Image (tube, rainbow, N blue to C red; front, side, top):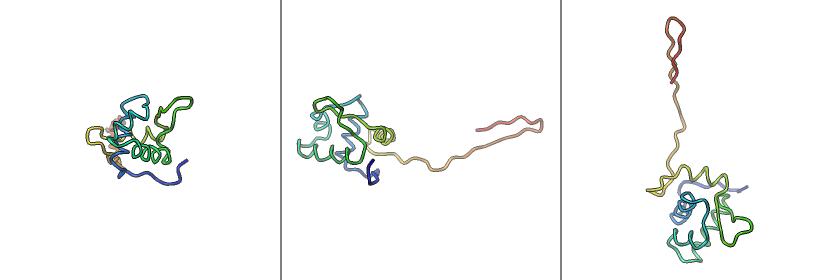
Length: 108
């Protein structure tokens, strides 16, 4: 479990890596490096940051294949894939309950 929170102001390279994983079942290191538009060393740095944050994991018994963790899926599901940013989630909701004189209810 990560010891620090991961926020919506992640580095653009990390957001591109998350986007690549969101649009596939898994990806190789070279696919993630290409998606991040960085050199191998820089891509490796950002992938390691995502692993440390608990959002990405290396697929067991594979050579260089990565996938989302459960937390990574939840985080990336809030991503606007065109803008490559995390959308703000509403914190409040409203319930409207209408009750007629004869006891019928309508809730929205």
